[in-house]
Image (tube, rainbow, N blue to C red; front, side):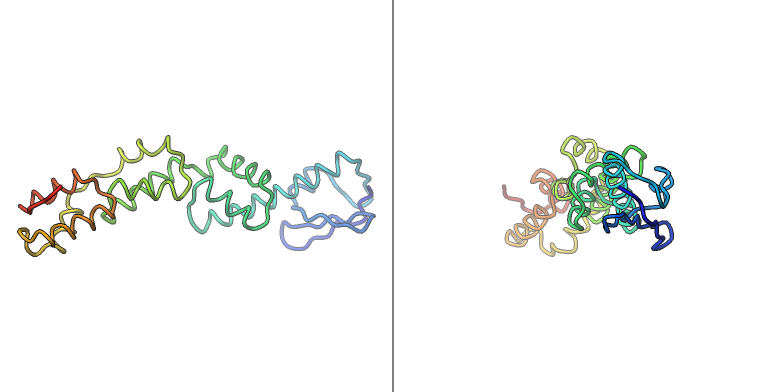
Length: 202
């Protein structure tokens, strides 16, 4: 297949025009890497490689754009790319490429999520739920939870703001339920309520 023209569409972006009238959107890196020029004849394998390399290069650019806005897990990024019409195989290849270069790291991201929710006063259960929702592998959960800061002042502050009468069992029950929804275990809730001399019921 003959290349009839190579047009620059924006900085770093090029369109390779072919003799059959089709066009392949690509990048400067791919075009120079494959040593393409107007008038060059491509065989089937070269044409396939141009298509694949171009799709994946554009996917990497899109992925880097997303990561510049906010951190995310490998699975979140892959899902985001697929949602934008990128082929599953290309999205997976892109995420693997970024991971190999340390540009996306589920371990670091999971630790950041754990620190964030711990600082906001949420317990291990809620942190686990967030890690699962964000597509973090279960193998990383325990290490992340162990490294998350344990700060009793957060749960104590929550209780102090909600519990005006430690002897009021209905109030204690409501506070306990709220803490459970925030991801604290019943054992941690019991220990915290004991610090307030509250009447905790299993």
